[in-house]
Amino acid sequence: MGQKDVYRFWAIFDYADDGISVEFPDLPGCLTCGDTADEAYEMAKDALKLHLWGMEKDNDEIPEPSTLHDIINTLEKNQTLVDIQVYMPPFRDAMETRAIKKTLTIPKWLNDLAEKEKINFSHVLQSALKQSLGLSDHRAVTKK
Image 1 (spheres, rainbow, N blue to C red):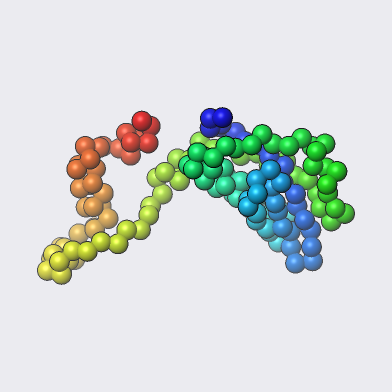
Image 2: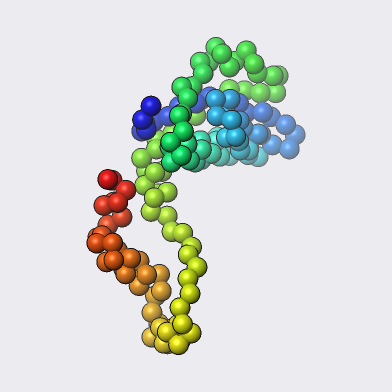
């Protein structure tokens, strides 16, 4: 199954005195929580996007969601079922363009001179990498 733009899964909201825990029965390991129903809902959307993105990156098969009938009969008294739907394209773009920290080593004299000249190390490294790779935009690599 290829990537979809929209995914929809059932989440179980488990209400307790100390907050609401959230799990996705079809996606083991996709867990989150919140202090309020609104916060739990937003956290569930974030957790679902991140979990699905990770599965896509790992080329894991994303299961078809269970039916309402299959899950509703498993609920306990303090639990409710919530339909969570996520739109993936903007999330994928954000994950691909996020900044990551890299540690590198340069000679002290070069570091001192660059700092004296107020050189932006990140900008210079990005420009040099793009030039070395013959790129003008990250999408030239991610869209191949």
